[in-house]
Image 1 (cartoon, rainbow, N blue to C red):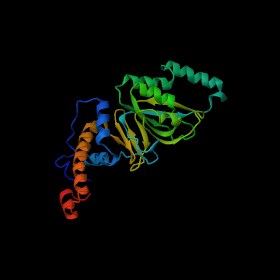
Image 2: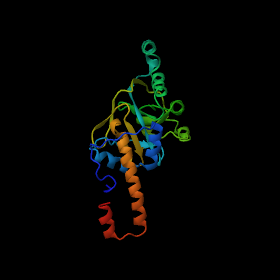
Image 3: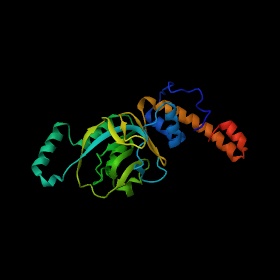
Amino acid sequence: MPHGPLAGLTKDVVRRLNITDLERIERFRRAGYGGAVSDALATLGVTNTVLSDRFKPLRQGMQLVGRAIPVKLHSLPDPSLDPAWQREIEADWEAKGGHPQKRMMRTIANEPPGSVLCFDCGGDMQPAHFGEMSCQLAYAHGCRGMLIAGNCRDTQYVLKMPDFPMFVFGTRPNAFGGWTILEVNKPIYLPGHVTHYVRVDPGDYVFADNDGAQIIPRQLVDEVLLRVEAIFEFENREREMLAAGMPIDEVYKEFGVL
């Protein structure tokens, strides 16, 4: 971890910025990478929010950043097997304000731009849980990517979208197999790397890149951003000196253990 750029900053220093989420996303994307975010979190005493390595980008180089909207899914049997049951569940949906996916999309639309949908699929890997048309609708109303502990599909077209990074467990062509949305914008638990599960609360931030995915607690987002930017500036100067052939003894005297 770099020493120098965060000197004097303890875990009790928590600054806040008067900026929008879209501005936060732009600044994180400019200065951030997985290691710097992890280092910044560690200086704040947070070491348990790295997610499982099962989360993979649809394409190398994707960088997913944004405010979490957690979504809890549950498996369902094929509704054609029990039409009466299907009518019953549709009546329940209508009483609650419409189809669960419609309610989820309304949540996206009612929040400021810059959200990331986070799906807890309950371990179900049978169907695809999201497709390109749903991605297009979510993006049009301010969503800036997805984190799915399950599958997506239509990736040929998702990859053509200008700005919709997705980190997923896998891909499948079939939407049949059955699932429904149980809760939107309530805490969920996603598979972790250091811990068995990582809790994701509404408003937490997702940061994911080639190194993996991690969660930034919402109360620390701006402080992490500022520390990441400090690391970015420091390391740019460090890179220049290393590339110029700085003697090894001077490197370790100036920068400590790299």
